Image (cartoon, rainbow, N blue to C red; front, side):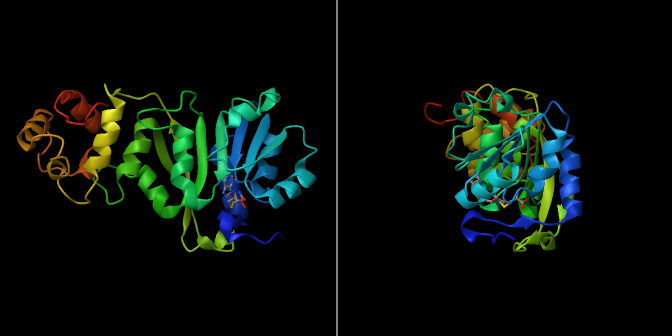
Length: 277
Ligand code: SAH
């Protein structure tokens, strides 16, 4: 057993049930080109390799990389990149490895301390969505984050992250995973989620504005939207816009759905005082 390192947020998944659920949720096909972030000791990797065309893994820990190369290096559909997924320019590393380019799926039990940035790198942002979206992204994440990803507007967990992600992808809960499914058990429970990037339903005229307004709108939790946005739009004008959309003017940021946000931002084009953007 390789001793997990805190520094890299290492928690080895040991539950057969959880592993099987993740693999099933990925709906692997033999044409799939999979990206795995943080393969660790390769427990999930070993299950995925026989099912897919190719698997590219990115692992930051050099000692684990040595181990993975020793154990899985002979597999012709396995390629390992050592490095920090967040800073690595993956496509530029793959020019000589056509079999591993253009991954269409992501399957991973990721390091929880960088969940937000990983999701942002996979999906892109409102203002700059990933131009080559994945078919599906199956991730094991902290339960509380999972709840925010698939939360419905108006629910307790719905926040700026929910909105930013749901603008770009459909999110669903696959299953909960108890802390005891890992060694060592993390302090929190976990959950498997599936993100399905999709065409943006109603495109926003100015994505940068939506991004900035969302940030401001969710600024002070539980405050009415018109209070959180008062520095960038006249209160009366915002009330007018909301009424035009048949939305209660006392609404809070967390009550608006993605499409309501988009129509609001589009309708108020010219009203938002957001500098250049
Ligand atoms: N998938 C394995 C390990 C999960 S623990 C399992 O299920 O058992 C998270 C893994 O992500 C560890 O292997 C850790 O070394 C790796 N990791 C942490 N930060 C990383 C980063 N920035 N880029 C790539 N891998 C990272």
